[in-house]
Length: 352
Ligand SMILES: *Cc1c(COP(=O)(O)O)cnc(C)c1O
Image (tube, rainbow, N blue to C red):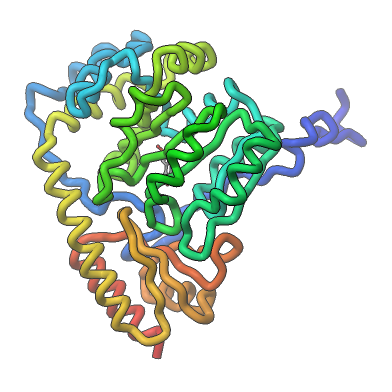
């Protein structure tokens, strides 16, 4: 085909044509509090548990397609059976697979994690977005009739919810799980929550899927997420999974790092106690309305949020501007004590 008078766009599926690529561009800053990552990277593992040299020697071979060693460690840590676990290259990939397998309509509350909507669009599935109520809880009065009417193939509930930070009330979640749709509870932030989560409910509900990830507990760079569900669901999703989706380096590193449960727990404790301190500090500031959080970030309302966002960045502090998702709101990730102090100091200055 000649280059002139010819447009690739016309070959692209209509649902992709209007999609924008997810922008995760790096914004230079001194204190990075925009992506809900863990601030802790220095991590020790036993020498015997991980040797780069040894892994390099096996890189001519494909990785273990089922990541068996890693599966064993996670199933032991969470007291699950390995057959109920499936890995994704981040939980994002599993969201892709789940929507591919179960199809639309795809129902989720808003505001929530953007990938549910983006991936539904990419796959050409109908989206049903139901606003959360005034307390950022599930509006079951609207959701339950919609489930009856629209019969969604899949429902996504992020609890704790990103970007609002709260857990949805358990009784409302259960009312939705009682439906016949596939219900995915995305527990990316469960390690920071005071609530017990829904792993114990897996025995009672066949249509329930729990999503977890290593991204928020210190290992975002590894790209390892996993789902826990009934064997039958795992088998169906496994049909569309790309055979070697978790690379050898990630498998080995995750397996070694997750042995160090003591350090991970320590970091989770530091983050949740810093979260409470940060929340207190934010409460004290005039013109700021922080929302309570069960996650590793805090959403707060502030007038002229665009301006405040830019002024913070000028001082080297990067937070997430929620414009277009939750108006007049910024989302700040809980960092180290030092980072949080820099953030608070900068916020006080830019509020003047
Ligand atoms: C960050 C996040 C994820 C994690 O995605 P990964 O692909 O595992 O990094 C999943 N769900 C929610 C709600 C998130 O905020």
